[in-house]
Image (cartoon, rainbow, N blue to C red; front, side):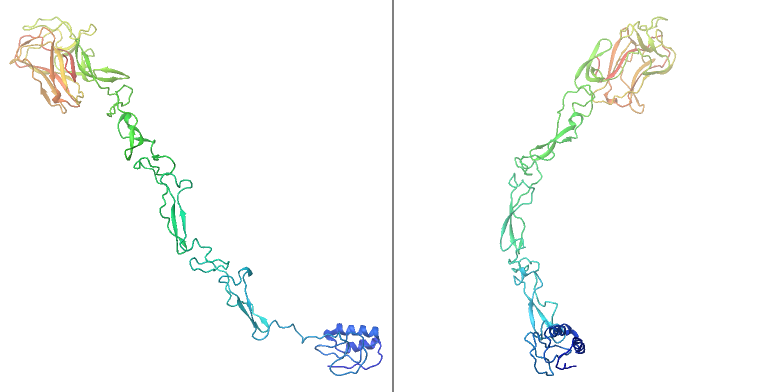
Length: 478
């Protein structure tokens, strides 16, 4: 709506009415400026027209003029307003290039600008069809990450080669170790060819440093203790390279046995001192024996399994009938045939003077009886070598067919075997007589010997058996 302001002088209040009545709207500042101008210059021009839209007003002093319906003509400093809103960003089907990535990659390599379109006077928020930096694809010969170089993040290109080595640092070029070569294949390094890395040291490569530590044949186990599986002191060993093999070599070679509880000769038996020696038997008789340990000392004669001069009584024997063990005795009725019992034992000891015999100091019962036995305890004769039974006898007998004197041996199970007597007729010993039998055929863990007499028919008075210094051992007395 338009309203004309009549010409002629107006008061300040009239001007305010005009301004208010002119619907200044958003042009209030322009109107106010004109009012100031009017107050200062006593004039605002011929007329002032206000509309809801734009306004054309004078910016300088008014010179007067005619009034028209479309607006007012003033000075050259008038202001032209818009149509009521902000100006559009674009029009129609306009487009423009765009790139949402870093400008340093824009239009580099595979990166390309996209396009923004005009939509209702505004540029679209999306950048269509742009190409941004991406991860390099090895071997495609493209600059996918848009940094100006093709495949520059790939391990290799073309037919490149390089040295390669998978061993520990510092071992390449030492001993058998050496570097190899890798060739580029489809933008990736191929296998390492020709490289030699450290290997376990072996005795097979004499003079070769297999583990590349600068030392030849330093096999891991060489020098370590080991068990040779040999007996005795030969069991302890040390690993060594022998020829092309790692072997456990014994530290000590077999030697002479001593009585220290160790197996020095490595035969599995400690303290078995080896060697021949002479055994002193009762009656100043010697025989060959072997050396054995007796505590911490070496002794000769441990090949004797039983030795008895009867000084210990009947500890090793069982007695039957008229058998007795004790001191020799002379007296009683003299025998009808032969000799009386001895006055001294064979051993010659002045301490015990003991023997085993039938009625010591007397004669046998002449009536039919027996057999009566003097039987030894069981002893172990199951040892290497020969076994002999020896004893000294003082025997007086009527002999067969009235009387029989016997020596028997038994193996396991009590199977007794008689030994052949050198004489079976009347026997009339007046001195101690050595008897020796090879009993090797009867060796056992429970070997026994027994001496017996049996009266088959009534006989004259005889002194019968006297026995001393019984020996069962590996050698006979001489």
